[in-house]
Amino acid sequence: MVENALKNDAIPLAETVTKPWGQKVGYLRDINGFIIEICTPILSEQNRISFLMIPKIAIAGKSWS
Image 1 (cartoon, one colour):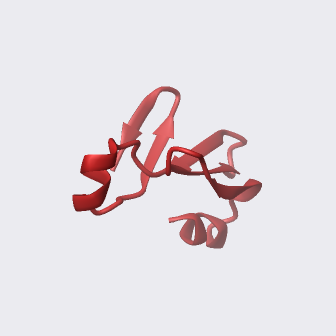
Image 2 (cartoon, rainbow, N blue to C red):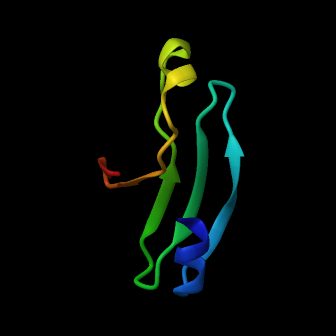
């Protein structure tokens, strides 16, 4: 997802990092100047084992898969 955004002129603001709880988070600025967080879901350890991590987009408190 990040690669696609960068191909469409988004500007990386921070490298994608893995948080201590396992979530991957990165930040971009889109062509309109909005800051976008791209992250994987936060899951319990039990769910993390059996769940496929699907990237999500969170914008202004809303998220989409």
